Length: 156
Image (tube, rainbow, N blue to C red; front, side, top):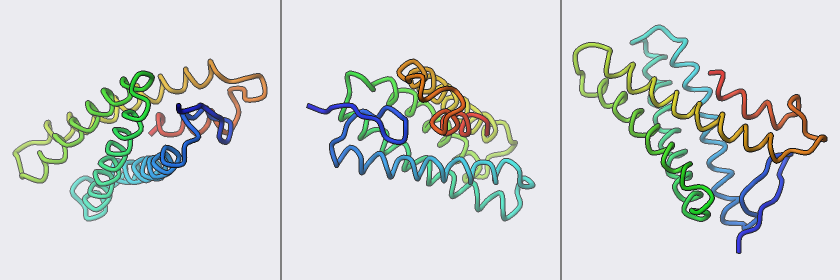
């Protein structure tokens, strides 16, 4: 049976080494997606920086979705909704990415796809943040490092 634990103030689903290994890759890929997504969003559209950051963003969210799928499968009963939101976010991001790669006319498909993907991830973060705050003790209040880690990706 997988047991829950706390790491750096956050509730994690299991202490099993395989779970923690996938979680570590998931977190690193997620941080990469946040940083490269912000760079792409702030760069002049169509510039080499925007294109390069966009490619890295898409690679990062691909890894995030792949690891989220494995993590959700390990705790399906508790985490199935994470897979569903991740699938929506990844599909929307793929639509936006493919729209640009296939040189479709106009920006609507690219902007809508990437925008829906970002919104789906923000909804997921908000839900996880609410769950984390509900499980937190008084030692881990809203100003803790744990809370900041959840709010940072939502703000981008």
